[in-house]
Length: 156
Picture 1 (cartoon, rainbow, N blue to C red):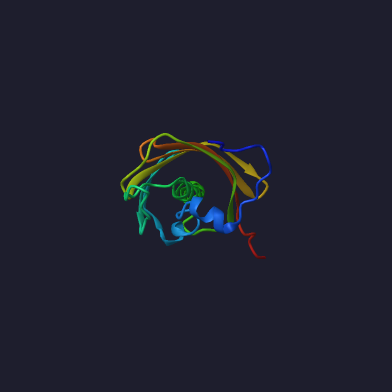
Picture 2: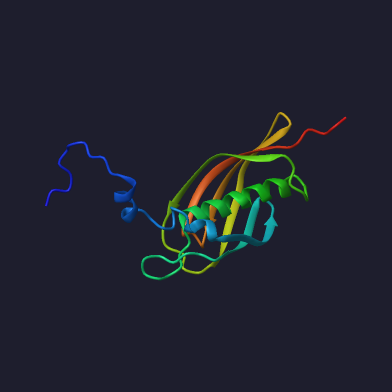
């Protein structure tokens, strides 16, 4: 069996469709991702998370996707940056500068814990820069990232 002959091949959308993940082509949009609560102790934040309406995999089971783990970690980063600065309302924008995750094992429960540690904070102009480390689903996904919080300038 020849898998790839080395010649250029062009695959049409109709030919690609049976190969693509249904989840990534749209099922993820039906998921409702929630931070149920967040606990803070110093530079450590722990969120109880839940996924409602999650899709099932080829084996008929729910499992937490890389996409959802990234979204929930990003949301926790936004919340943590505000809590760290004593804010109770989102102000301005928290820009994700970079994020890197490693997958270790599947999370089959739609409820799980997401942990975040602030490893560096620095005032930058009117904003704050943070480096963070993440653990989702008891270490099932681990990673690092950085964000820049740019608050809305106060009106004179």
